[in-house]
Length: 193
Image (tube, rainbow, N blue to C red; front, side):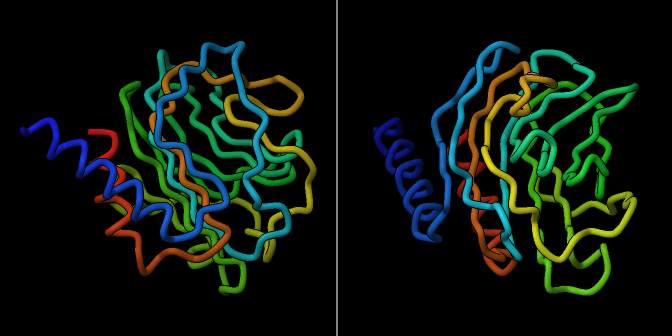
């Protein structure tokens, strides 16, 4: 009976994420082994707003795990380690925002990008495991994401920076979901257990 209730809770949580009209949603695990990736349509090229939630469990502290990428390096979300893990969103090879993550265990990373806002701190906000961080910014976060071509989960389009680990969930919205973030995080926690 408990298992049936849990499945129902997972189904309800996934239905809630779908009700917010994602451009891409994956709620089943994808194992990334450094040689496996998927070409997808995330629907973010040229977007003025975006909300992205990923649950990623790295196999190791790699130099760079490109979890989501648009273009070769035009839009990238990933983790990296040179002593500590970094969550970053980047365009044009500039890392615009980063949060430190100190271990190689599963974490839920959230980015809310609002291009119409003034200043980096309101344009690009980052969360780690549901807690908003105080990112380090470099450069100026652009008002729109670039009009790149091609999107991939698990590596850049040039096959560099392949990710190693399990991607438990990806939810991508070409909209500002800041008002729904607490409910989104609760749904993600239910789905990934």
